[in-house]
Image (tube, rainbow, N blue to C red; front, side):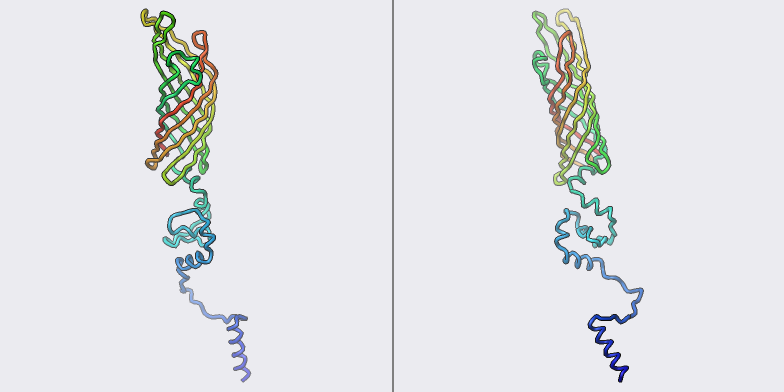
Length: 270
């Protein structure tokens, strides 16, 4: 009788959760399906999942300690989650844009039109640039070459001069860029130093006598613009630029090579 009472007491305690009665567990017992666990945890913590940035289907539960993609069964690492928890625009800015090459075609206006006779202050331009972005950062360095040109007849008293003006510029500086994934928009800005060589050639139309002069001055620039990505590696956009430099000494006078510029940009990104 005493042994029967003891067994009954143990059973009652076990049913109340006071003690545990060991039982055999087979090593072949399968754990709960990842999908079921994911659904249970997601239902219990809706506030956590709603705070996450939108990510592809099946990855919403990363960061909740599960570490398993319920669609593929892949176990995500902490580094995976850190990457996807970054702002979406920042992820876009460093995607496929480690090296950027750009072709520029446009027009510029010299900032001091009093230094340039006739329409010599309105010039067409072309150029090329390259930028190198730091890994996992939206900042980098840029450099490039630009040229502008125009040709006009300038009246000097009774003499007509067929005048060509060309500017050659080298620039280098820093760059920052960020993107918006929806629509593939990428914005950028940069600033730095430049060197501008101003070259002027004048030919007298009657005697055909030609004279020329040039001077190189230093200065700075700033620019900004936007691209629309038309494919993974190609974008089309615009670039607005302002450059400032010391005046160039030409034919015993001075001319300011500073300018404002607008250009079409075709970018290639790798």
